[in-house]
Image (cartoon, rainbow, N blue to C red; front, side):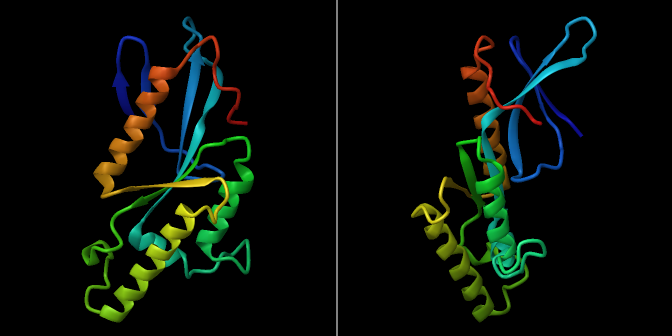
Length: 173
């Protein structure tokens, strides 16, 4: 499905598409006014990898199938660092609070397991904050609604600062 946002200057929407790395990108498209055919597509300088605290805790211990001996998370970060080289704004978005036990699905009954999951997430957050994943910044949101608002804010910022005379240089190809 598509989510539409109309205003006088821009027509924007969200679409679901598999990306080689990351979960979210922001793209500007130019269409022929007569045929409505897309004639140009440019990528803004930001890619976002999102994980909620439960997903992050789990993917830190699951091995990568393609990039052994790395964990699934380490492989994702490697791809973010390597395959998105021309995008300078790489962002890891952590959704949820590792200090809030109810954020970890299905482990409320096992305090030792919950403590281990919380410790994994907190350690990883600190590693990213301290620059261990070169070129990747971190931002945290409280929940899915905050994440959606964060993404909307980023899109609106790109729209506000967009200059058609100087479009982004990167393309989707």
